[in-house]
Length: 384
Image 1: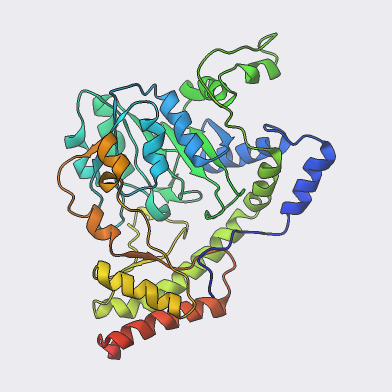
Image 2: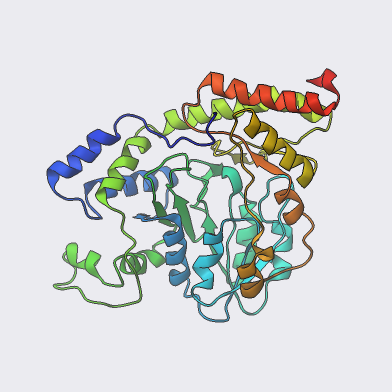
């Protein structure tokens, strides 16, 4: 069976973990956490990066930092993971879902402004598959209406929009280092702060609402509870595991890009006979090969496609069920305008096996199985 995902492992993880154990400092904010934070800051140019226990918790920090309160509205795509919505709903926000673009599956920047109301406080663009949203227009809208932008860049580590790192363009960025991501610590994430305005409060929120970070720097003679917060610090063991991969980030990225490019080159002929659609990466975006997906004609064909791959020992998966159609989404939010593409595109998309150091033979099997599926469908086999 060709697995859908295998978490990255580069070989240095255990050495770093052993160093943590030897130093007898395994709780958060030690040497390895600091090195991970520094790597993110240097890579993205943000004022401050803070490793967190998950991207979900990074988003929750963002909701606290932007002072979300009951009745505030947050604009986001419906085609995203539940954490994007949960973080703000937990603070009492009303969710306003906006349709996506069919080319990138990102929020349609041209529909955001009409979703803005006097209660709107935050826009949350989600960079699907590590392909950047149209951030220039989103930031212009935010500036015009006095809104904050929180980038859900869970899938966007080491990807760029017009040369700027995803997660560094909005006021706050949120990364994921889950085991399904390009760089992993099992469970983990990071909060990126573009400017200094949020740094001190972010440290307080992350340290259970205390000013412990200031105490450790000698800025206060004792620390106390000063604001709402939680325990968002990951273990040094997790940070050590991640740092080994950040040390080889370019190697991992190049390997994934090669796998992504081979999928595209081998399957491109199928698009000529309108059998399926491949990912689109706008020219202003540099993606990170986080995933490779294809789009089928409709839900029925997608179901048949996934079943056929499974019967032939290839794991594949669809992705999000649109949040606005879920039980919680209908209760906690509303869809702004018309759902032209969100549901339609969600019902057609299939993610293929994609991970660091994917064996060439395994990728060949995936590609050959896809081609056989369409031959069996009798769809213009001369193009295959």
